[in-house]
Image 1: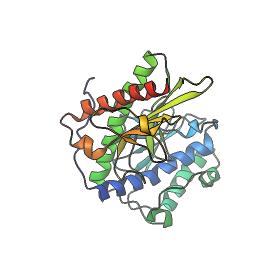
Image 2: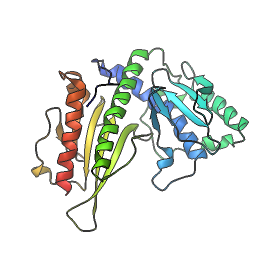
Image 3: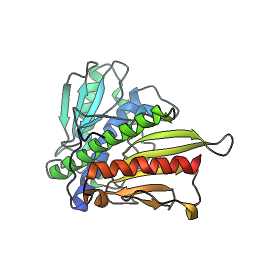
Length: 285
């Protein structure tokens, strides 16, 4: 595939990247709160899924009823409202050195000016977030994490590029593959492939995505998950960058340190994803 748009991924101290990931995860909850508060709910919570905007190098909500969208460039953690044209932000608020209380005040005022009830932002989150001082009132430190946030943005941008290619390939094969979206709960960006399995009436699912890091791996990692879970004792070999993860879920995984060390990061990561998807589909069908 073409390398257009791929950004080289440098090695980085995991603690710095983890701190940037946690701050971005908290920041993106303002997009999630906005989506839950003002976009028509869907059974799969798809209304809260976020789109990667390459021009912003960040995430954006789907459209609110009046066409407004809220975005968050990952590299500088600036909340920005856009009108229906998406020509550019009309109002913005940089989170650097600000606590969530100030973000709530700014966003609430902006939405109230558009005729929306700002109290919808205060609804309890349906999921817990990883522990961080921001939850206790600490300020964001985008400036102090600038290099790590830029690296995190590169991981997401590269992932959107590769995952869009996988999704297109699946659609060409007449398989159902969802749009590439970021889910604010786990903060992963992914597409989901659905296909019939060898068991009549049972649908199989292959999740193809990037996690920025979590309790399983404290670094970004690509995954190709398989459900229903196959027999762990009979899993086939994977492309060079990957290995099987079988604790609590079954997925082919390729962590950041392997990708950073690859001779051709983009090509070898793409080979891992496409090869692992082929293995997953074979396991199910």
